[in-house]
Image (cartoon, rainbow, N blue to C red; front, side):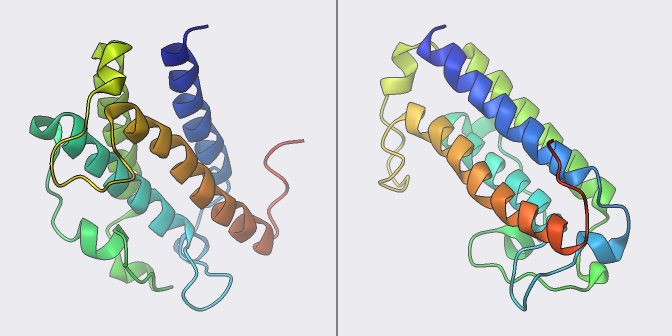
Length: 164
């Protein structure tokens, strides 16, 4: 398996894990349940993954990034989740955007060569994303970080373990 194939597998597996965690959320109250005041909830997680993938797209293929009104404010870095479902777009809308943004990100990934991963990111990109490869690496570990939060929320709601 090439490094590119391995990285793609990690991107897909991270998202498949998140999707499995999300299957048990059924009600608006579950989607916005917070294990403590200020904690990230499932709906915030979904919007944050969409917003972050869109940010990654803006770095590697800016012409494919999209502006979604209010998404950065509700789901971006520094946003503050609330437990009120009415503060957010519908679950279906946010899930669709998350899935669509990951499909676009993977489509871009598939067009890149191994050499492309060593290309520097555009000026103004955060220094921890020094090259194109690091953008995709971060997509994996960033999702893992937040899916761990999602796992805690699931268990606090009494959901069975997602994997047995």
